[in-house]
Length: 464
Image 1 (cartoon, rainbow, N blue to C red):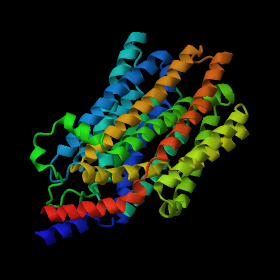
Image 2 (image 1 turned 60 degrees about the horizontal axis):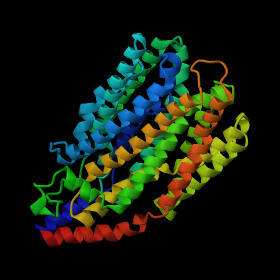
Image 3 (image 1 turned 180 degrees about the horizontal axis):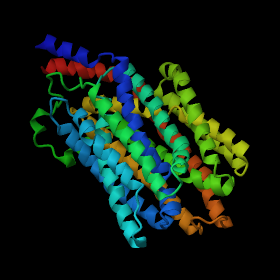
Image 4 (image 1 turned 180 degrees about the vertical axis):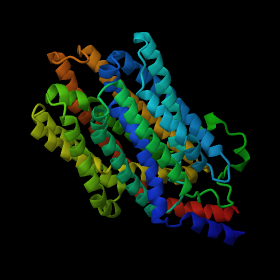
């Protein structure tokens, strides 16, 4: 029995094929085709195309994110208890692929039913999308800790996933408006555009399901050291164990902040280009300047991550982001200066992908410290934090625009509205980024992981 357990532990440490890594990463493109669109264009679509109040939409988004965050926790709980011939995470990729694509299309199909009717439609479709997104994405991210326990392989799939994230984000940011214009530029053009994106998204989720395999946990080992408590644990117990995982807490706080910054950047860029730079076409320019350096620097920076560690490179990237924002602040109305700042910021953002592999490592840390594996809950509860951050960032845009007197569709905005747009694009993000640097300075698991895994595997052998 001991030899069987040793063999199964080695199998969980297996190196993955390039096909499996790329297929897993393709799911990230599927996610970002719709999720990035929700952050980059949905608020603009609601205010300037559908004609809905920015403040009202911002409030709906934040309230919805809170409920969605609760759904995250529930989905993590469900994922940890899912049992099927495909594993615990993979089956949800197949189940949610088509619903996710359809829900994304409905976001950009607001009917002409009056102000109240539109708000009700937005509330229903936005929440539907968020729930389906949760049911698809929590298992998808949990899968990264189930295909292998090898720390380097997790870095590999995190690296490939980050490339795919950039591809999906670039496709949306650079391709959405040209497609909308190609289909006529009206409301129906937005719907047609997202029918295309929704279909592609569903297909990529199915590809990720077909070509991946769960290995960790399918080893014949009971991963609960607390066997006597296994059947009695409820959600309260799970949350208690989760909050004993200090590295999960750090990464969740960092995820909250980074997603708030991302939501601000994506959601306010279209306003910044139109009213600060006075060049609506600059949206595509800024998107390319943001995505292309990331696309180039992610592979170039990968050897540095291997050499200096995920945490150290993430901190270095956050410092570069602060420098980029400082450059933008010096010439906020000058496209050339803003482009320079965006490029520097994008180079720093190229290290953000390291958060995924770091979060996967906290699964083993939590198992070692608390005696139970919680990959579903770890990824879902962290997602809860990131969604609250994203929702707060998006909501903040609506609130600030409303408070400062922004008028949707107007050719010229007031000075307070312009100040609010600048604050949302530069000042608030740089403050949040500094907070991220402070938090990540407390993360030490990179250097501790091999020792944690060794002790964990020794305990499994002794217990069986």
